[in-house]
Amino acid sequence: MEHRNRLSASERQTQILEKAQELCARKGFAGTTLDDIAREAGVSRALVIQYFGRKEHIYEALVDHLFQHHPLASDPSLRGFIEKRDDEGVFRAFSMHLLRFVSKEKDHSPLRLIYYSMLEKPDLYERYFQNRRTKALKILEGYIADRIKEGGFREFNPREVATGFMAMLSTLLFQQVTVPQLYDETSFVSTVDTMIRVLLNGLKRTD
Image 1: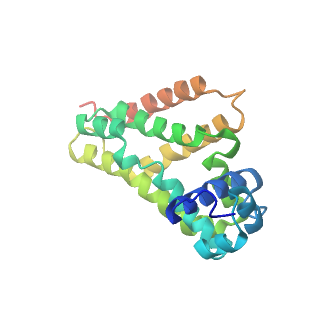
Image 2 (image 1 turned 135 degrees about the vertical axis):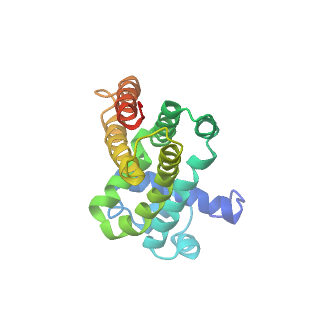
Image 3 (image 1 turned 90 degrees about the vertical axis):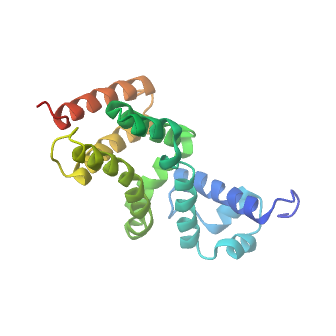
């Protein structure tokens, strides 16, 4: 069955991970079995084990797969605003990049998987998601640090500013994904823009 479509090993692994994401986002990590993943991917359980081994290894590969699909560092819009030192543009592009990523498939959004992992497997979340999240935050943290050195921002702890902004953004993203009828994209964008203006009013030097 697994050879019917003649996919390469890499393509097959990607297919399995995509199905694993859908299942884990709907049912949680604990509620998803290797048999479930194999059945959804149209392959045998043995092939899933051959590629990934234990379910925990699928989780680790899945986290890597998810973060590879929203590489902030190569986002042309974000990169352009960083080069132009457009502060509002940087924070907005950062926000919209994450919105596009988590909103692609609301029923099995990556954000659902993240929250499930926090509740069900905090040890895995700490080991895998947090490490990747830190890498993403470093982009924003680095920009803030550069603007402080340049004299554009006041003296603040760049990591604390980036973490605080990400915490606010994560809450808005979760609402947008889980209750879109109450909190649609227009409301999300409006709220983010307001929060960016408030944040920048506090960060920017006025002297």
